[in-house]
Length: 225
Image (cartoon, rainbow, N blue to C red; front, top):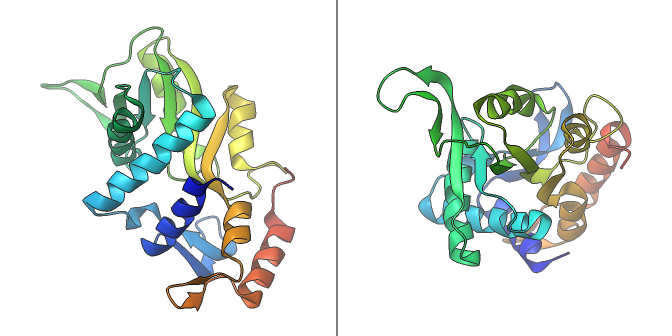
């Protein structure tokens, strides 16, 4: 596993974003882990988060894009932080763009904030985590209605590696449905492998008990790929 991925796992834990225990997800599933991107609240955290996203984007999609689109609301700070980091790390200015939940009818009018979209723009979409693909289902038509853009891919912070509506992961379902590649900074298989038995801040986050719970969870909900 690449060093930046290991650093990102440590960063998720230190930020209180990734927790292990017993959680009930919005889907109703009982999960032994929980990821909350809302825990990134400081300037330092957002700066680091943007750098991890930028590295993952560069590794998976290269520089062949013009706009980073973050769906409202969580995607707004993600797109801003990552465009700043991308310019710093790779010397390329990427425009950021997000949607509004409701169109603005005065001043800077329209459904978009940040950069406008132009025909021919190459767009990478950015999200925190995709569990069902619902947000992409809502925002993809917005993108296509604003201009004749080419979506180069979708990047998320964590691939949960669990089934979506089929036996495949939600990320793979998005890729199959819309025809663009998807990627994550890190996936749960990598997280588990890295943290199992590892002491972090004086305690082992994934001990034998949590590992057994994770194995049971993925035996029931794990994606086939």
